[in-house]
Image (cartoon, rainbow, N blue to C red; front, top):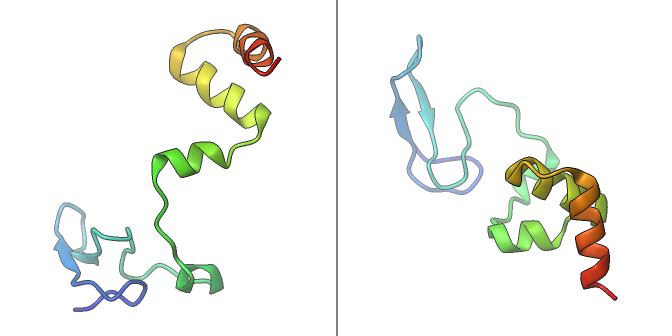
Length: 82
Protein backbone atom coordinates (compact mmCIF):
# COMPACT_ATOMS: atom_id res chain seq x y z
CA UNK A 1 0.00 0.00 0.00
CA UNK A 2 1.32 3.45 -0.92
CA UNK A 3 1.34 6.34 1.55
CA UNK A 4 -1.20 9.02 0.59
CA UNK A 5 1.05 11.74 2.01
CA UNK A 6 4.47 11.01 0.49
CA UNK A 7 3.91 8.05 -1.88
CA UNK A 8 6.38 5.67 -0.22
CA UNK A 9 5.53 2.07 0.57
CA UNK A 10 3.76 1.62 3.93
CA UNK A 11 4.42 -1.24 6.37
CA UNK A 12 2.10 -3.00 8.81
CA UNK A 13 2.47 -1.92 12.43
CA UNK A 14 1.28 -4.94 14.44
CA UNK A 15 2.43 -3.75 17.88
CA UNK A 16 -1.03 -2.37 18.65
CA UNK A 17 -4.42 -3.92 19.33
CA UNK A 18 -5.32 -3.44 15.67
CA UNK A 19 -2.86 -3.76 12.81
CA UNK A 20 -2.37 -0.43 11.04
CA UNK A 21 -0.41 0.60 7.98
CA UNK A 22 2.33 3.08 8.81
CA UNK A 23 4.80 5.06 6.73
CA UNK A 24 8.34 5.21 8.11
CA UNK A 25 9.29 8.03 5.75
CA UNK A 26 6.82 10.73 6.86
CA UNK A 27 5.16 9.21 9.93
CA UNK A 28 1.65 8.91 8.47
CA UNK A 29 -0.54 6.29 10.19
CA UNK A 30 -3.59 4.78 8.52
CA UNK A 31 -6.85 6.32 9.68
CA UNK A 32 -5.46 9.71 10.66
CA UNK A 33 -7.08 12.75 9.12
CA UNK A 34 -4.97 14.61 6.60
CA UNK A 35 -5.56 18.35 6.66
CA UNK A 36 -4.44 20.70 3.91
CA UNK A 37 -0.98 21.18 5.38
CA UNK A 38 -0.29 17.45 5.36
CA UNK A 39 -0.35 17.38 1.58
CA UNK A 40 2.36 20.07 1.51
CA UNK A 41 4.55 18.05 3.86
CA UNK A 42 8.22 19.03 3.81
CA UNK A 43 10.83 17.17 5.79
CA UNK A 44 13.10 19.47 7.78
CA UNK A 45 16.28 18.62 9.61
CA UNK A 46 16.76 19.12 13.34
CA UNK A 47 19.02 22.09 12.61
CA UNK A 48 16.31 23.75 10.48
CA UNK A 49 13.77 23.15 13.26
CA UNK A 50 16.03 24.75 15.87
CA UNK A 51 16.73 27.76 13.64
CA UNK A 52 12.98 28.31 13.36
CA UNK A 53 12.50 28.69 17.13
CA UNK A 54 12.10 32.15 18.58
CA UNK A 55 14.11 33.26 21.62
CA UNK A 56 11.60 32.11 24.26
CA UNK A 57 11.08 28.73 22.59
CA UNK A 58 14.84 28.21 22.39
CA UNK A 59 15.31 29.09 26.07
CA UNK A 60 12.56 26.66 27.06
CA UNK A 61 13.95 23.92 24.80
CA UNK A 62 17.51 24.24 26.12
CA UNK A 63 16.54 24.53 29.77
CA UNK A 64 14.34 21.44 29.64
CA UNK A 65 17.02 19.39 27.89
CA UNK A 66 19.90 20.46 30.10
CA UNK A 67 18.01 20.74 33.42
CA UNK A 68 19.29 24.30 33.84
CA UNK A 69 17.06 27.17 35.01
CA UNK A 70 15.60 29.26 32.20
CA UNK A 71 17.06 32.44 33.72
CA UNK A 72 20.63 31.17 33.32
CA UNK A 73 20.03 30.07 29.72
CA UNK A 74 18.36 33.39 28.91
CA UNK A 75 21.25 35.40 30.38
CA UNK A 76 23.78 33.23 28.54
CA UNK A 77 22.02 33.66 25.18
CA UNK A 78 21.69 37.41 25.66
CA UNK A 79 25.39 37.64 26.47
CA UNK A 80 26.25 35.72 23.28
CA UNK A 81 24.24 38.13 21.13
CA UNK A 82 26.05 41.24 22.39
